[in-house]
Structures are given as C-alpha cells and as structure tokens.
Length: 280
Image (cartoon, rainbow, N blue to C red; front, top):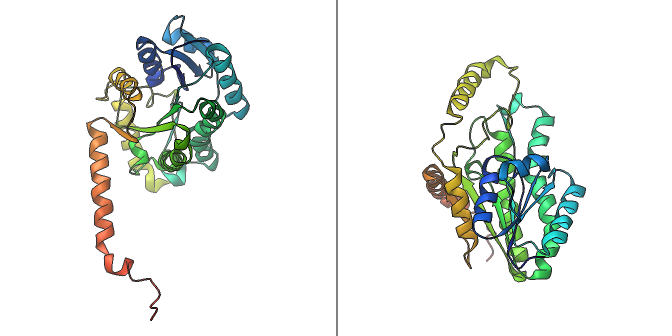
C-alpha cells in the first residue's frame, strides 16, 4: 500500500511508455508498468522502489484483470490509467488482410477497452481517477496508408468521448492525447507491419510511402521525453483537457479538421436543414 498516487501504464517496455513511466516516477508517483515481457519493462525503466512491473498483453481480458489486481495488491489503488500500448499495420486498405485489420483494432481499441473495464471498478470505488488514452492525429483525420490504424484510433476517440460522460459522475476524468510524429519506436520493424504488396495499381505509391516512413524513423521532430513530462504535468491538473494536441503538427491537424468540418457543414446547409416534416 502507498500514500502516493499510482500510475498504471500499458506498453511501458519501450517508446513513449518508458518515458511516461520515468516521468511519473520522477514526479514522485508510484508506477505499475506493464508489457508483454515484464523483465524487459523493468530493464527499460530501471530499478525503483516505487515501480511494479507486470506482464500484460492488452488483448487478453484475463491478463488485464490480473494486472489490475496485481497493481491493487501492491499499491492499493489506481489513480491514472495510461492506455498507451500499440502497434501499426500500414498499407492500402485493399492490400491489408482482414486478419491484419482485426489485429490492429484488437490491439488499439479492444485492448484499451479490456484494461479500462478492469480498472473502472477500482476508480468508481475511489470516486476518483484519470483515464489518459494515447490516441493519434490519425484519430482526428484519416490519411492514406493508415486506414486500419485510423479506424482503430477513430474508434478510441468516440469510445472515450462517450465513456467520459458515463463515468464523470464518479469523479473519473478523461484525457485523450493526439500526438503527431514523435521519435518513438512506432515506425520501427518491431511496431510497424507493412501490407504485402499484391496490387499493381498501388505498387508505386506503396514503395514511395514505405521509403519515406522508413527514412523518417529516428528523425521525427517530437521529443517523447518532453511529451511524457507534459502529460504528468497535465494529469496533475484538477481539470485536465479532454483532448490534447501533442506537437505543432498535431495542432495543424486539429485546425485543418475543424475548418474542414465547418466548410462541409456550410457547403449544403440549405439541403441539410430541409428534411423536417412540413407540418401545418
């Protein structure tokens, strides 16, 4: 048991998850860091008496329940749940297999749902907690080569926006984070699976996109350490933002989508508003 606030972080073995765990520990919090290999998670973060590393494959409901139970056994509570674990199936929709698309949505949407479902009873009993979910600018605006990823992230956006209304009466808050391009492991071969090219019509664009993204890996402008520190700061606010655009590129996506939606609303305003019954 601890008097410290407790962070529960998924996907904490590499990338942004490691940085969030380190930032939370540096902020004086207790951390439950999870990943598919608890030993690798511990090695990536480093020894700390306030750290508890637990195996968790987020696609397993049973492992989600077990990891949450382990967290409560060790620290007595969960104050901040960080849904961060993820992967990336990249490619044109026609070339992504149904199994790949299902795997993408299983990890990025159903995975966070599994962990959140396990943690919510704890937060309801506490009448306090924060659901901090790492989404993406791909959850705000779709993009070529990202159809499966965007489908999952758009699902995350709608799910959390709705869930926030359901759990706010219990003192549970939510924050969706939409990062742009950060220098994490997302574009490495460990995290990204490219669709196997099978359609000539897409071959040229596939080669160009894979080359561009491969060349970008390790050169992204966003610093994940700075983002992690910002998230710890925002999580400490009494009223954290419902959405947080992480990065200049993310701000641009927010503004572009807002303008596009307004333009689309105005484009056929007369027709859009003409469907009421003509009652006397």
